[in-house]
Image 1 (tube, rainbow, N blue to C red):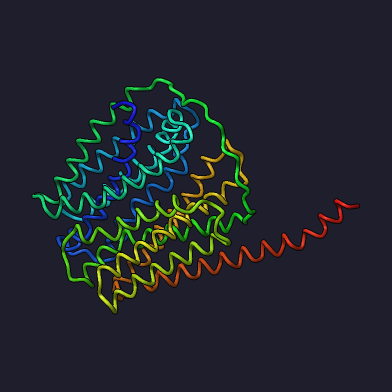
Image 2 (image 1 turned 120 degrees about the vertical axis):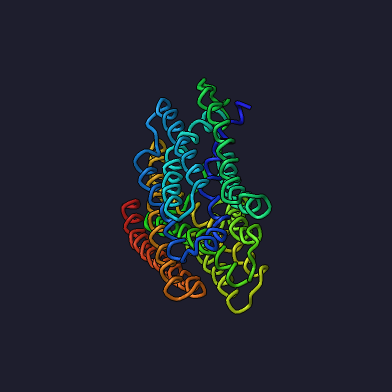
Length: 389
């Protein structure tokens, strides 16, 4: 139990903010929420997560892990209780802020603990736990709300009970148990990319995530004419799973111009989802979510690798936190913008608007890469001359 406790805790921490995603069509109907308020609720999580991750998300040492885990789990419990007691949107906003503080405080410390005890295998374990928590939080909340009584209460109380049970197991086992050393893999050659292309790739990944998580369930409910929460949670769940599977199936540096190609895949998926406005079909919506999810996973991984490529190994965690902060902040702002479009016009208009924004980001990425490659080509003759002189 203790060996699995850090991974189990990471699953629970990542599940908490995603439970509201599966429940959002229920809240929208119960409280008559406008799309703008739905996106504001989603963005509250990102606005809390971004500064927490940037300022406190990368602990300086092992001793700093434990208070972050304890306080972060306390915020997670507070988020569960606020959601369980909520009878209007404003307690939900407070709960989302608590969830952002929880994820921002806990994930960096749990990552250090998992890597310490499992070595390089821990990177895979963290990816699995993150996706598993996000997907389970979405589909489990929707399923429980659909088929069990007290839909706005039971799922959060169940999560709070699990979180309260697992947290002491992690905090009570502070022994240093380093993983057995393994032969380090030969570093793959990485084609130099401009850092701004990495940031743009991460922004595109999370702008699409904000759109899918915040609006796609309500979009599906409106166009497909269903109120089944489990069905409406499927696009988000498949999007998250596809993002992880794409990273596992395609090794890095196998795709030429990966930042642009990955963003093109995202745009294709959003375009397929937009087509549901003219051809209402659950299968078409799920297909769009899967395609966009594949692009999201590749774009985020590619962006993170570009940004951290020129960073010293001991600064990778800090670079990753800065990269995530920029991506999350842009996602929060864009998601509120899409919500405003959906409120003033309609949900049918918000999806094509998101595709247009993502196209502009992809075009900017292509221009930045082309200019960087041109500068590199111009400097090559000078380098060859200096070498042969």
